[in-house]
Length: 441
Image 1 (spheres, one colour):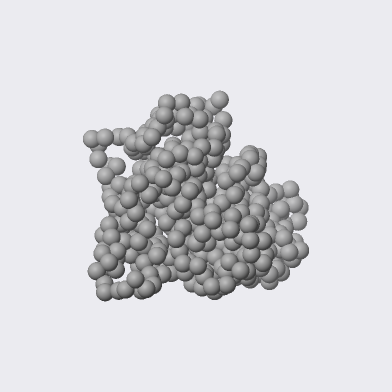
Image 2 (cartoon, rainbow, N blue to C red):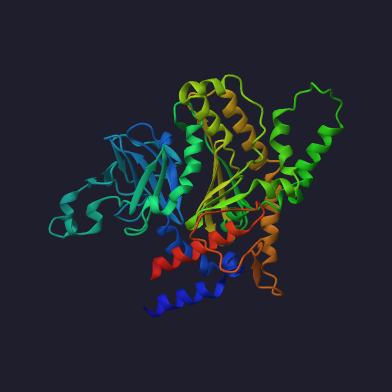
């Protein structure tokens, strides 16, 4: 073990305890650099969806940790994941969020060009490199590919590291949440519906990930928004036949009591994955969309259709940095930019073959809950930013994640527990420690 490796082990051991974590994991630029260098490269991280690059030459730009990437559809129809960096002088090949490059990429600096699988295609004035040994360098190989990538039911994940845990071993049974989201389409496929809502947060990325399974905050933090909306609705003149507006169906459950969240349960899987809403969730009582169940029954049979639609998981966290909502077809990507700066992208999906009212409801949910102009999202943002500022106070150094902690809990095993447990947060930090150490061992 090198001196540097030993130092990294000591740093990680210093900041992580079974039931609490040191404030440095949220505030230290040095630990943030360790995450970028060792955590994100060793995990399978979401890149994009195949529907964003349907045709040869279609590409999107993405990011894993601090690494700029391209997802591109090659001429053979396969999706490739490449580093967005020219091998000549390092210039980003493209800067647009999405586009079509045709049959090749062309660097805007010196016009080196590359096939859409990354292979070097041409160099202007190539004779200037004759006899220089260019053919033996990395530059001659073209755009570098990531260590591995995998298409799971349309969702593209990548591992930057050349060697490491396999896709199936990393996710295990947690993929059942993605399965349920895709199976809600009568034809078994999704399409990204438009551009995401992007929202900058002045806080550490892990605060946002933890919040996805924090069920003790909604009725407190969101009282000013959801609570006010509920009071207004309750004060309005209406009859027993007055239908509940879709907006109220979306926002009112945020004010459910503690007992609701306790009873809905939390499931954790190894490697930092987990979800709220084992038995029910805030999405369980949405109004039926005319014709949807009939189309699902035709596709799957009545029993299987009821099984798919009866699964109403709330938030599923895929470690390290995305969350999906199967019942509402949403994915949130928490992109780390600095120890105290995170860009959040909130994507929605269309259920192919399903009524348009479903994607309309999903879009409404996204605007109401996750937009920069959201009624609810500002509540969370204020809490994150207060926490980021509060963690600089020197009176206390540790953050407590001890709720329903049991000595010796085994995070290598799946568990279903009380819906207000903080086990999923402990599960994330257990994976955080293991995958950082795995990158330096």
